[in-house]
Length: 123
Image (cartoon, rainbow, N blue to C red; front, top):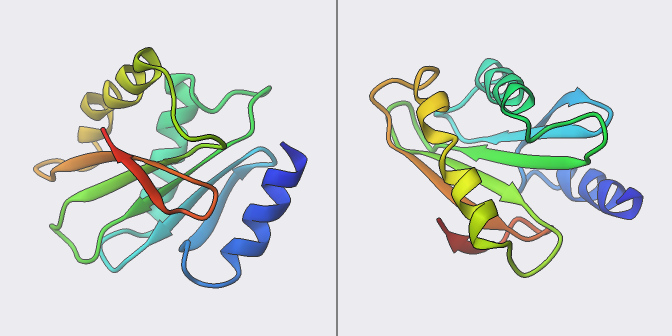
């Protein structure tokens, strides 16, 4: 995972991933677009810490994206492989109800992203 974190650090400097918000040494929320802010990234990071996705022993990053205020919010789980188990997909999708309190009346979509932030799958 050290290589993965180094790769993400290099990728994040190109502006394509968004602005990094470091929750801690193992977790970063990249936020991109005029419809999300650093505060949104902080809320999302704190939520995923409480949800159990960001733990002390895991190295996980996500991207949040929204082109303008009121547009759907896209949550991208950055994964190291081609996919995840159906149970993990369900776990990711179940985060919506908790995130909805930070983004009331906004549609939230979930995606699996590769390390280059290319979309692999919409959940």
